Length: 299
Ligand SMILES: CCCCCC/C=C/CC(=O)SCCNC(=O)CCNC(=O)[C@H](O)C(C)(C)COP(=O)(O)OP(=O)(O)OC[C@H]1O[C@@H](n2cnc3c(N)ncnc32)[C@H](O)[C@@H]1OP(=O)(O)O
Image (cartoon, rainbow, N blue to C red):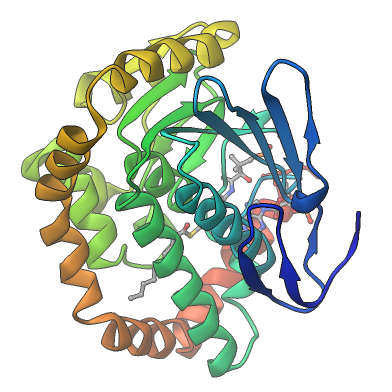
């Protein structure tokens, strides 16, 4: 495995353009005798069971699996690779960092950078969401930790959510607590999941739900003991994979296309909106104060 930059041809015969400095070892995947394969990249671990047609992506961007640009770049490449490889019909999303599913957007990508960086970052966020939300694979989120904001969006974009029963693992779109506004497409996904009134309530107050509350409001589909999250995700996956792909995929597309198209048709305007919002002095100050509070929490 090596540091790669530029063009690389993968085992599946596909050529991907990689950002300079992104380390990927996917082409050196170890293949076990039982059909298990393991791809390794620096921030995204991909384990797969070829026989079952199921892959598991484990976020590995310590300490809190924030969605940094580097993480998103690796994640998008992995998703693309799995999506294009017809071996895989199901994908489980989970975390390799104890107690944290994902802390959401990396606040350091939104603070003290230039406008071009904000635009590049937001495009990567949009791309990640579109790939998840419109995936042909069955996506099950095995939520084994806290899941605020962008972390919650990743879970909400899956087809089914299993959350570990631990009161510290709160989930929700808490943007207003940071003094920022959830983008309209975050809002759309929440409304599609829990309904308009509950979404309005949760979004305005920036609510982070404990597992039992999250189940009650419909933000997750199942709450199980922590040591059963992965096995439950796997049995849910088996159930979903029993449905013929073409019928399930067309149904998924029928349910989700309008929401995704709503962003696709105004992607550039959405990027400009993010850039001008996040670069305001008042927003920069709010984000810096919030980051500082997080840092001081420990002291
Ligand atoms: C039109 C305009 C639209 C704008 C829309 C913008 C949309 C935004 C969506 C988002 O996702 S914003 C991000 C929101 N995320 C959060 O509010 C989560 C903040 N983090 C936490 O609550 C906690 O960290 C945690 C995830 C519950 C974990 O708690 P724990 O006690 O385990 O760890 P900490 O000590 O708090 O953190 C460790 C370390 O990580 C840093 N950090 C935490 N979260 C982030 C983050 N989102 N981005 C960057 N860095 C983060 C934290 O500062 C600590 O750093 P240190 O250097 O080790 O002190």
